[in-house]
Image 1 (tube, protein in one colour):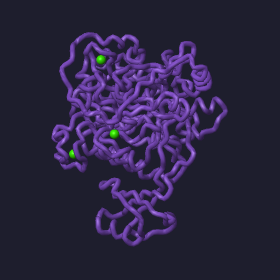
Image 2: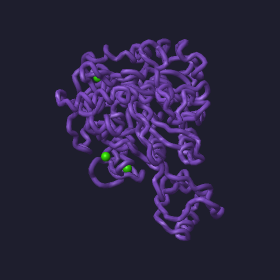
Image 3: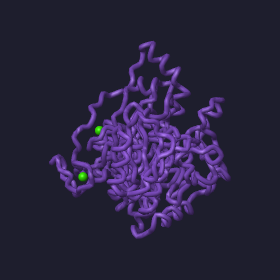
Length: 470
Ligand SMILES: [Ca+2]
Ligand SMILES: [Ca+2]
Ligand SMILES: [Ca+2]
């Protein structure tokens, strides 16, 4: 399987595995049996999932063939690549041409990685000035959700992504805080295996600051780097309502757990994705947003699927983007991504496990976005995913990644649609925290509005809608 962030980024896969890295799943949970395998076979090993009896094994041995009975399977450790924004892909040539002429400078602030994590404070109250420009929030009647529900209070949404600008003025009050962990004392106070993990963890660089490090816009254009993906996703879910700043999310009282496993250059690994999922489940997340995915077809997707099954067993919902393959197919390119996710599988969306909700992207006319995958079994509903306004690092807001006047690239992708659904699930769940994950999922899917654009293409034939939430 090749993995990607399904938002806005196009395929730039060269090789899709880390050479000599394997994921070893044991039948036994006995540590001595597991360790004895590595002492017999050499190489370096690292625990990935205690619950999953899963290790990363770095070895120059050929990790295929027959192993002893302690081993359930050995899979390759796959890379995760960001995909490019369909809008950037379409406009890339023209933007670069314009930049070469030197008449334009880009809005590309310099970032320092891993700023100190600030503590939230009291903010002024007042209308959010950009909310009226958030067409997607009106499309799903987020206002009715804000008015009739506790707005996601009591629900934690884990954003498994490129990190989050946890100090962003419109997100700082919405960050999950690990209350048992004392910041900066160098001690794993809650004994969860992570030191000073106060807002989440960075599984990409293994530190306690899952900051959403962005790349220079030229690098984004040329190489598919990260333009603030995880921060944008987070703002759709839970940016603050009525704090007189920016916009507001679908579930402004929900909390965002920041789990970074994709780095600024747009690359991550399957073992880090699995660690993110396990962390979310172990530390109290109710919902995981996965605005990423990949092409199925390899046999080696079991470790990821099993991580989602572990989440299911603990009553955690898993919201996943359908993928952006349709544009490539329309352009006559074959990236292996078909318009029908069921017919040509995209993982993890196609796993279609009971705790999963696959999401397609709609535009402001309620049409299926030109890039969006669909699938009448695995994809459950459509949600806004074209020109989405949200938070980006450095206290900024964007619905447009690059704006050169006549040439624009907007924030498009099924990555942007998925967090609308994650936020709406938080809204429904917060009405009664004793509801099971399955009840919450079924309730949300029953609320959808029929739209001809996705009739027969997604399981509900509908668009996300909070209009009838009481
Ligand atoms: Ca800890
Ligand atoms: Ca970091
Ligand atoms: Ca706000």
